[in-house]
Length: 163
Length: 142
Image (cartoon, rainbow over all chains, first blue to last red; front, side, top):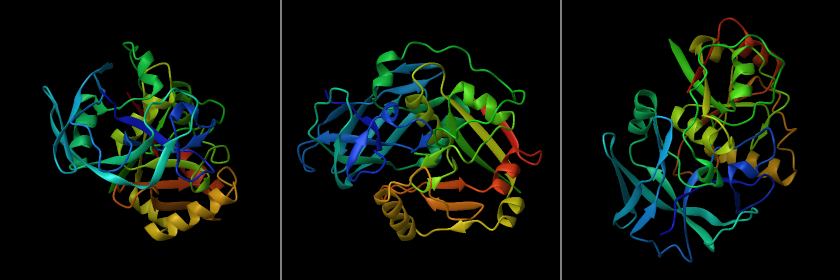
């Protein structure tokens, strides 16, 4: 089964994608969820679509409903619909990790972004998709809390933003 | 009225940012040099998860008065303008250096016009002082 990939645009290139871990230090570029394939008309019926819930990464499936519509149902969280829209331009993964898909032909757009935001705010839930980070996805330590004391300036790494 | 923006990052950098250590001169992105924030927590958290191989994904939540934000007269780019700037910055290899000579640049994230998500690039010393100052609440979200 193929996976939904979380990929970012490679700085200084056109149509090239890399995993977030492969971006230069301090470079801030939100990624998107991509589906691989040989052409835009070929979509699978089911994709792996890992999710993050309460500090752990869990498996889930993104299922083709009809046309460009896909859906993922997460127990105790809810049902999420996505449109798999044609990527703006032909895109390829050009990083260093093993990668089976020839092209990244479609990007996922959530039907209800407000619901995604609500469950992120209230239930420690988010879709994460696949990157090599998933292979190291053991349960995580508790998060630090509260503001920290002053510290030296630092690069504004990562994005909110992007996504 | 307050507005909230998010910045996904590592645990170390989140501590520094919450302590008032934002440095707009260090980071870069598709619109050049600056400190980038976005409007959605779930986007920031997903990014932070994949970007940082160890530890829990952390997001810094910055809450500010929208009157203060608009008083800095942000440069608002249309989607077409953002694409044009992004292409120019990319072709000139200036993602780590380009400045608009503004305090804040407010733009859609470039990528596809069918997946909309806004970003704010804070690029001036005044913007940095504002973000690090007492009028902005900087807290970590797990």
